[in-house]
Image: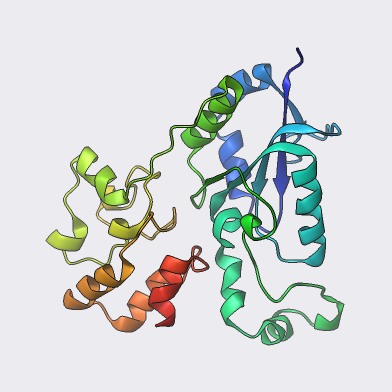
Length: 253
C-alpha cells in the first residue's frame, strides 16, 4: 500500500497557516515519512497529480477562478480540510462584504478596470462540502499534527471545542475581563491558542472565531457595563472572523 497523498492549496490569504505547517519542523519530518507531499508550493516545487487523500486549503474564495478551482480540488480529494480564519470565515478580506467593492478598488488600484474579483470574500464551505475546519489566525500547529495523524489512523481528531475562558482557567490566568475590566472576546471565542493574549495581560482578539452557541449579546452587554465604548465593541467583532453569524450580529446591530 502506497503513502497517503497530502496536498496543501493556497487561496486568498497571507500564507500564515502554511507557515504554521512549516513551523512543525521535527514533526513535519515524521509526517513526510508517512505521507507523500503531493502539492505544497510553500515547501517544494514538486507537484504530483491527484487524486489526493487529504487536501488542506488555506485562504478564502475571492475570484471566479477561485470558485472554479476549489470545486476541482474537492473532486480530486477524499478529505478536504479548511485551515485558518480565511478559509473558515473569509478572513480579514471579508470586510469587503460590508463595503463598496468599487470604492475599494478605486482607492487601491490606478486602473481598477483591469481587476477581476468577486464582490465578496467567502469561506471554502460556501462553495464545497468541507470535511473539517481548523480555525485560527493562524492555525495551531499541534492541531495540524493531530489532524494529519488522526486521518492516517482513521479516527476522529481531538480538537478542542470549548472557549478561551476554559483555557485561561486551566492555565491559572486571572480573568482580564472581570479583574481588570479589559475588553476581551474570550467567553465567545473557540479555544486553540492556549489563551495566548490573556496569559500576558491582554484581552482575547477572537482569532479562533466564535465558539459553538456563542452568547455574543451577553458579552457585549458586559463590555458596555465595564465602560467599553459601543463603537469599540463593534470593531472588536469586526475583524478576521467578521463573516461569521455570531460575530456579525454584534457589529451590524
